[in-house]
Length: 424
Ligand SMILES: *Cc1c(COP(=O)(O)O)cnc(C)c1O
Image 1: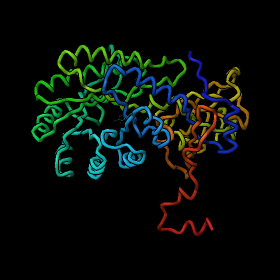
Image 2: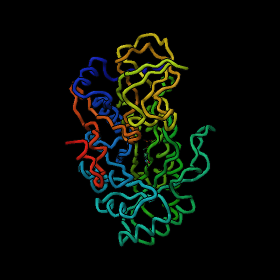
Image 3: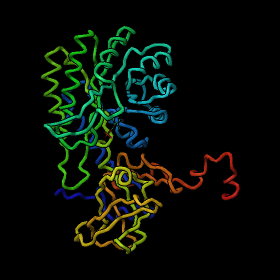
Image 4: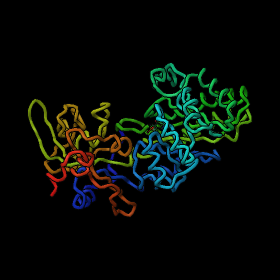
């Protein structure tokens, strides 16, 4: 068992909570920086290596700018993600546009920013050309070989059921057509499995993409300048999971690279990644307070956050480790359901969880919420989104997004005079 510890102390959280009341998201700048440094170190064998941070995971400009310092680009899949990337100064090849079911105006905006467009589907060739009035000189294509994706006979995920990417046949046709249309530089992309906790995922995916790249280069005599391994490197949400080793992962990719690409005259191909979860999930926590306890058929602890602030448990039944602050070493003597206040019975951050005895007012630290946490938030029951706070390496803290207010929530009712009635 891994001893999962918060990246901060109860005293620090109480200090922050005096200024910014719970619930709030807290991010650990020191952890983010160290992890990003390690990623670049691990892939330093590849000259063109670049991480394009998956903006959807944590669309906060302050955090994106920290990653930018290390050379990370932005992986976008919507208009507002493109806008956010533009706002932090990303441009041209700093942006990868890996969208699907794409509205034409988003292609146009991505092209205006000079982004690398990653085509999800064969039919988008025509739409893209019609939208722009020309074909970009550089394009990435998203591959989905179908079937189930296995590593050593264990089924990892099911690409055959995934809506993304082109079939092998479509991919080949796309290369032929795009070469004809004057595309000079290609990239190849695939995303086979999400949240993988194994050092073999990237190397296995890389082998498939490298072999396809060698074949396509020979068959169509095109220049393939990068391979985009996309996201999917996971983190150990559960204390009994063994964390990935990014150095082993990068070594595994290198081995495939030297076996497949280098001997085929493709030793200059750049490796790109589009990691989201791996970059930030462990370095963010949702901090909430126990405000109600209820004893009926079960023991319930009600907190001041709810699924609006963190949807993963309600949506996927996802496990998030919980620490009762100040009781890190106390014995786990009670079984609780930790719930939010939505009128939705799946609004539970934990079900039947062994925890230390919780007192009203205790701070509850929900681990590993730095990616796909805040960003999946919604507004059901008229509940509001929390603030986001950055904990700096020197122990100081900075508000990097204020909490939503009722005024924000009602702001789209231009057509009904709510403001006049409630806010004088
Ligand atoms: C969601 C997504 C990612 C990031 O996935 P993680 O699991 O967070 O690493 C990367 N690329 C694309 C195209 C995505 O949709």
